[in-house]
Image (cartoon, rainbow, N blue to C red; front, side):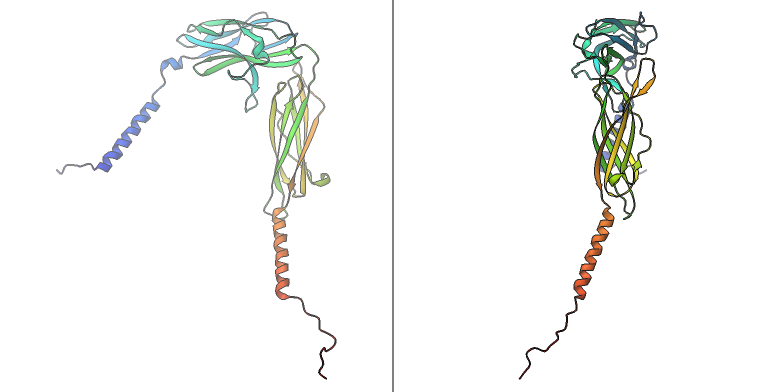
Length: 327
């Protein structure tokens, strides 16, 4: 039998394939059991504030003091080493309230919460309570302040939100700014196009608010107005936070100049959970909606007329007499 020989090129390909398979086996290898054991939950401590709270909610005068606690439940099979820190609230990209990162400087609730411990070890299957004190300073502004407590282990986080209302006059207010319109016309010389209206809603008051929104685009003097349809309410915005909105508007006529109108109605939720609409605020912005296809067609038509006139020329007028007669 003729021995089977392997060429250098084939040997190189085999090495590459085997190396790739080995790398795939390393990538597909299950994580160590210790990493899977890093499982825990946090909950509010059971005390005079209640036994089944989903988060912390307080009303307190500036300079006051509240004592509470956070419970950590180790659901794993190994000892759990956790770090704890207070933080101010921020909005994530989806509009949910999240906690600021460890490098962010706290100026509200994150600076007013004092934990009894910043690092703990919880035995497997055990529950540990970490007390904390909340003390807003005497100069704390009246209104809503949002923050929380974050626990961290191995790059994972779990935490609870703290909603604090400092006693004093409430001034709910929203502002709309940066109204911008982008227009995408149609290839049809007389057809309509689509517009996108973007703007920013900012909570300039001292209470947490969401907002009902209405957006429309119209031509000069309000003609050919088109609405954006139903625009979803903004998420709940704590004081000082903002939310950027982008609303599409269909079938906008190319009326040379279009103006977008934005109307935002603040929605205040009281302690009983009922929602009250407040006075609406409005803003506007404009853009050019030139019918480029039609303009190009007109320019081409004018150019064609000019070329035809130059080629044909203008007939000369004949003279009435004969000049230069020979005597």
